[in-house]
Image 1: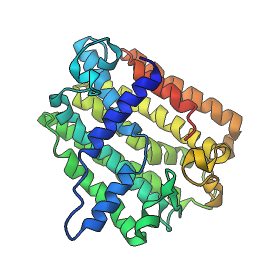
Image 2: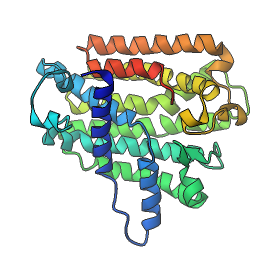
Image 3: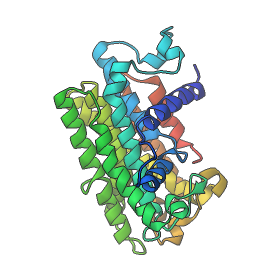
Image 4: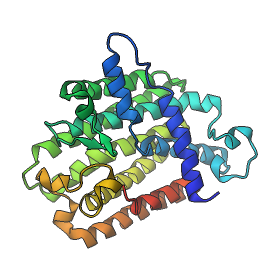
Length: 318
């Protein structure tokens, strides 16, 4: 199976799992449910829950001393039907996959607000606030952040693994993770951050949820402390590479390819990796960070699809 086929398999399965946990759009609060669901359903690559799934498979394979399911030639009916996990494993990790995508979507909803980046386009469609109004856009972001934990609570994971996974989900999305990074990013808009401040923004605003994805997948699969730490480090490198690649795309991509306005960083007065290091060094840094991440995956036994996915992200167009 080539990478494109595997990517479609993982993407379709992940999207199905995520959407299965979205709330019904009914009741007096129907508008906020519609706005919240729109924010999640409105495109998106599902990379974070996909990475969580791959991390789960990586550690499960390491523990069971067998190849990750998608890499085998198994004739298992569930794999042939596009299902990557058995019902038991899906009930364990599925709620966390959905929760992760909800938190990621909530951050994008808030990023697009007039008080933040003031973007009216997201993934080629009207951003949530542009479609439902600034008030509902704000509430939709809040709702998704809170509903993510209600969703994660549906996991059937073992008690300690569940507690550890929730702790990671909360810490990496909160004031010492994503929200912390967003805070510094907003405060320094229009100003010149130091290189350390810029790294802090990248590691937290972008990297924290990727770290959480890898760590939660590993925790739920039974990883020990050293394995979780290794995948946290792996994800940190991925987060840096991902954000630097975003910086590059913001100046060299097109609105059609990117699905949102290009040049928004400079218009908002934001300093990026390119400002400090230039395009050539930025591209090299993306390759270096990605190579570091792939090396860690290989040392943990390897996962063909995950390694190919990380390589793909280096040259992505959106």
